[in-house]
Length: 216
Length: 250
Image 1 (tube, chains in turn orange, cyan):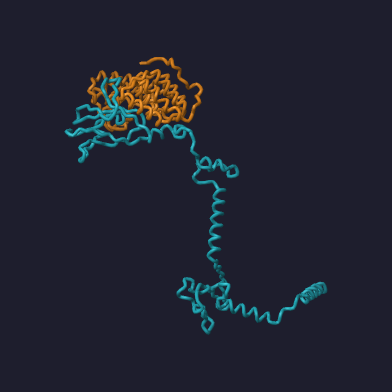
Image 2: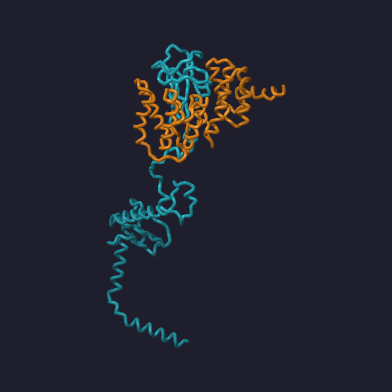
C-alpha cells in the first residue's frame, strides 16, 4: 500500500501533460493504464539518472502502434536495461543521442563490446551516426560481426559522419539493385577507405573478428 | 668676475667681426621675398600675416589673392578654405597630391606592421591570455586546414545539433497527416504535415538530430503509413515495419 503511494505521483507525472517530475520535454499522451504500468520502471531509471524520456517515448510508440499494455511494459523494461548497458559501454559522458543510438543497436543485435570499441576508436566524436549506420547495415542483412569490425575500423581511420552516411547510401543502392549486403559493404569500403585521413590504428581500440554474439 | 665676462664678450665680438660681410642689398632682397610670398609666392605655401593674426591659404587665382588697400585680406568665398580661421599663431601644411599618396601608403604599411605585432582579436581566449612576450606567429596564425577529424574539433553535443529534414507524403485523399517517430517522441500532436495546394503532397520540415531515426505517418489519425521514399526496417521490440532515415550534419 505504501509503495502505491510512492508510485502514484510518478504515474501522474508520466500521464499528465506539462508535468516536470519525469523531465518530459513535451506533453506526454499516455493513457492511465500504460502510465501506471511503466511508472516503476521510470522511477528506477530516474533514480539511476538515466534518460527517462526514452522510456516514455517507447511507451508512446507502443500506444501509437496499438500494442497491449503488457507488451508496452515489457518493451519499456527491456529498454531500461539496454539504456543502463549502453550508458556504461559509452562512458564517460555519453550523450542522449548516443545512448538512443546504442539501445537501437543492441536491439538489432550489435554486441556491447562493439560499442565499447567504437567509443575507444571514435576518440571525442559523437557516435550517433556511426552507431546508426552500423545498426542499419545489420538491419539490412550484413552479418553483425562483419559490420562491427568494419565500422570500428572506419572510426580508427578517422572517418567522419559523412563517410558513414555515404557508405550507408551506397550499400542501400546496391541492395536495391540486387547485390548482397555483405558483398556491397566490402566493395564500397574499397572506395571510402582511401579517402580517410588516418591509416594508423588506435591502440587497444581494435575489434577482433571473433566478436561475441548477440547479448539479447 | 666682471673682467671675465668682458673677456668673453670681447671674444664673441671678435668672432662676429670675423664673419663674412653681409651684402648691402641683402635686406632689400629679403623684404622682396617676403612680399612675394605674401602675394602667394611661387612655393605655394601658406603665409601667416602676423599683423592681422590671420592665416591664409593659397588661392586659385591672383584675383582671390587681392589685398585691400587697408591691408586686410579678403577671404575667397569660392574656396572652402577661404573663410577666416580665427586667431593664434596657427600653422597649416599643404601637401602635394603625390606626397599625400606616399604618406598614406606609408601609414598603411605601418599599420599593417603594427597590427602584425599585436595579438589578434580573432584568436582564442587562451591565446589572448598568453603574455605577449611569449606570443609567436605560430600561435597567432589562424587555424589552417588539417586532416583532423571534425569529431575531435567539436564537442559531441555540437556535432548533434538538429538538422532540418523535409518529410513528404503523397496522400491526396487524406484529411490529415502527422509524422510520428523517435525524433518527436512518437507524439502524434507534434509534427503535422501540411498539404501543398499546387502539388497535393503533404509535407513538413522537422529538426532532427544526426543519427538513425525510425518513423512513420499517421493518415487521418489512424492509418499507419510508411514513407515510400525511405528504407524500411522491422521494429525489434513491437514487430512493426517502420521507415528509416539516417541524418548527418551537412
